[in-house]
Length: 294
Image (tube, rainbow, N blue to C red):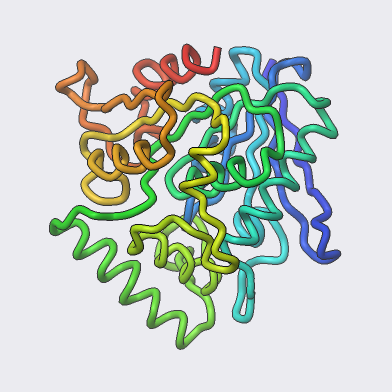
């Protein structure tokens, strides 16, 4: 029987709480850490009633799944507002190790499975390469790109206008990016938005705060084997061209990139989000994840 626990972790700053949704049928299962991307919360991995999503699906297969909302996102408190001064450097160096440690405190120091969607994968890869905060058996990245190199109409609308132009306007007028009011999953602090922008544009993959070289760290670290899932219909947010470039940047020869599209026998050309949310994903995509992490 599917069970869930709502965990509110006391963050070391003394004021914030990090929400983690735990989903399981048996607490003895292998721990899975699922991390959402930008303008998202952990809800990309599960529905409110736990009837849909990758997290409940994995729980039904015997895994013990932990899905956090990063600081200020989703059910984590307090919510993002004007004046928040944290960015992705803090996610990489503090939040991800903090969550990994919390999972270890519950499950013991056993191997974890790490799964990401979109920008969450960059922060997961960076945190593991820099700290190895947990023993990680395998990685799965849904729609992960580090840079956006493709140019098309989708980029002009979604990135140049929706992300850069409107983001810059909101940063100046509101002090944060209020994406929830636009119908998206979560707001963004200005600092995190700004640091993401640098990584999207710059060829070098270095920390925007202390210059740490993440590309070199990945090459010098025994990175866990990773399954990279790219949607054939994802025109810009993780275009397969940019997913391939990001995979090459991390540089693990044991990794595999799977293109989710009709040419490879799938029922549709999946896009950035429906590779996780489509009704056909449990039949076509999730079993490939299970095979990889098993």
